[in-house]
Structure formats: structure tokens, C-alpha cells
Image 1 (cartoon, rainbow, N blue to C red):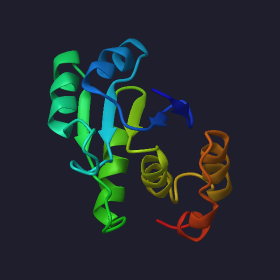
Image 2 (cartoon, helix red, strand yellow):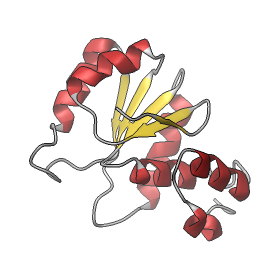
Image 3 (tube, rainbow, N blue to C red):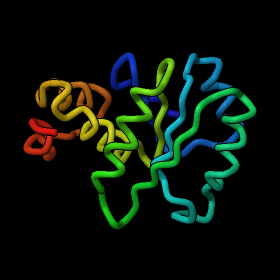
Length: 138
């Protein structure tokens, strides 16, 4: 896993395996958000397997798949709810971490300054400057 810390509350990465969940738990994460739709790639584990590993480890798990249909307000709301409902650090993943970072950034609109959101994402290696117009209002 190539973990990319955005801030104290959220870290993202590309695809994980069910056996990675124990490492995430040991690292202090309390919640996993899966932003990758099942079936995108033949070598990708099913979300249900990661959900089962999360449950066995005592971690909260949220499936908020972001596919070709694009971002919806419901996805942003679910991301915000998962972040707010977490008792500790949140780990989100997709294929590369970009979709997870996008949903995090949009969920922070109106809560953090747009420039700060873009800066934090950039320091983690994700350019979210194209979202600037969407980050100033909720």
C-alpha cells in the first residue's frame, strides 16, 4: 500500500487487499471508505471481501463507489457523513486515490477554505485545483 496522508483525519491510497485491513487497523485507522466500484479490473478484490475483513477487525466500512457516472451530491453527503461519524482517522481507497481525494475535497466545501483543501490534496500528490469553483460553497 502506498498511503498518502492528506491530513490528520484522512489518508488515501490505491486498491487494497483484504489482508491489508489488519495493517490499517494497526496504523490506527477506525474507518475504511471504498470508492472503487466492483468489477473495474479482473485483479481487483470484491468490496464484500474488504468489508468482511473490516468487520472482523472492528473497523467501520463504507462503500461509496465512484464510477463512470461521476460524482453525485449523495456521494459527497455520504463521504461527509462517514468522515464526521468516524471515531478516528479515516482511510479511503479507489484505483489510484484520486477519486477518494476528490470526494474528500468536495465533502469539505464550505467547511475549509478552498485553497487549504487544494493545498492539502496537493501535498499528498493530488491536484484538485480543477475543483476550486466547487469548493467555495456547500
